[in-house]
Amino acid sequence: MPSNKSSESLFRQAMEVIPGGVNSPVRAFKSVGLPPRFIQSGKGARITDEDGNEFIDYVGSWGPLILGHAHPEVLQALEVTMQKGTSFGAPTRLEVEMARTIVEMVPSIDMVRLVSSGTEAVMSAIRLARGVTGRDKIIKFSGCYHGHSDSLLAKAGSGAATFGIPDSLGVPASVVQHTVVVPFNNLDAVRIEIEENPNRLAAVVVEPVAGNMGVAAPEPGFLGGLRELCTRDGALLIFDEVITGFRLGLGGAQGMYGVNPDITCLGKIIGGGLPVGAFGGRKDIMENLAPAGGVYQAGTLSGNPLAVAAGLTVLKILKRDNPYAGIEKRTTLLTDGLSAVLKEKGIAHTINQVGSMFSLFFHPGPVTCYEEALKSDREAFVSFFAGMLDRGIYLAPSPFEAWFVGAAHTDDDIDKTLAAARESL
Ligand code: KE4
Image (cartoon, rainbow, N blue to C red; front, side, top):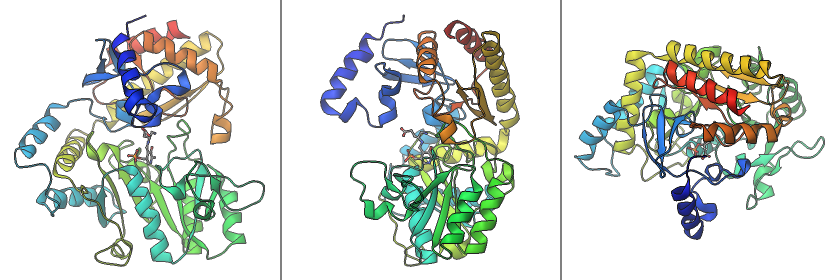
């Protein structure tokens, strides 16, 4: 068992001055019952913890690092940009270039607003949809996560009640009463909600490919059905592509499935590892945002030059090199290999893969929604996670997250990962 003395000592120190010892809950490794590893550095597909243990990294900072850690061109862009200063609170040329790049790469986006996180992007998109439609109600899907804004920290109300209840302390019931939560991939539930409450819906917000229940793909017709239902009812369709944007291809999930939302939320990859979020859509929608329109939204560090320089560089490389086919091929090598080992050992499992993101569920499957994902064997996951960590493979410390393969992962990394999996299962 590799030493983690420094990580354990840092975790004890952290617990004294940071709630739970971390700045984002999932990092605390609570659901796997282990102390978290404090990471000292990363390069390519590898990270090194404070005890000098090196890992092949399948978290990639939860998705942003599709090109790997410390990419030389990203670092170069940051070096050049930081020499000119780090933030001005004034418009810059870089923001125009980023907006034009996103508009050019995402056909459904005519205009885009940059923010500093995925949470901000989705929270602002909801407010915009409510401002444009004059309606309050929103529909989200259980197991889809859209950041921690109040309206979206809701779980399904009991029984037939078509309003959400708080999914966190501190969220007023009065806020989430406007949030209806239905199962992912359940188009009928959305249809019924709209038929029973016509012209009340401001928006449907969805991860077009779910990444936060583990990975779950949209069933055939689901996204197109949402598009149709929203158009008919005058509600806006919001795709939360914070994970899938520029992950599943240059066109994201909307490009992969050929369904255009009214508003797209982005984050992660477009920041290249620095804090960026964005939301964009048709001009007639986006021009309702202050100062052009009456929907207020703001941010001191929105469009920050360093974050934009990093993100722009990543988008330029993705456009130039288009690494998606190779990344997906390597991902399939990994998922096929994992499945073969699990079958050999007679372990019930389901692997849901879309492009370069996937999840392994210790459950015979299928897993098409959160309710099915919850049936997975948690103990099996915890034991697998620990075995992989001990063997130098760094996975998301939760069965309800995705593995991310990137351009920096090599065939040798895949072989090493499969060897570790064989010993860990
Ligand atoms: P942030 O505010 O964490 O930048 O983005 C929120 C968000 C929005 N939409 C989707 C689809 C997301 O996946 C996220 C954040 N993802 C989680 C993990 N899946 C971030 C990890 C964390 O919370 O520390």
